[in-house]
Length: 88
Image (cartoon, rainbow, N blue to C red; front, side, top):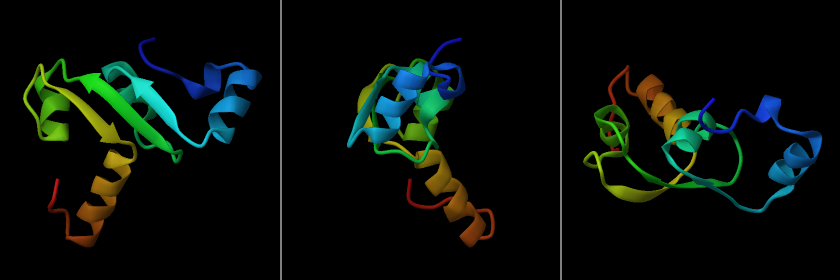
């Protein structure tokens, strides 16, 4: 598996993860598996594919620092705007 599957992590890792004031996920794999987790997350990654680049509003190959919960926030925006996405 690419990224971090929190359910497969050790109890020690999970305790540290949930107790952290800030978590930085490195790489697209961690973005894909952890974005949406309700934790103080930021991601540093290079968008390796068009789908993720489009999701982040950048070009494939760009490096970016983004705050977590983007997918959840976007889904909430869609539900309040009748399915339309605004303000990436």
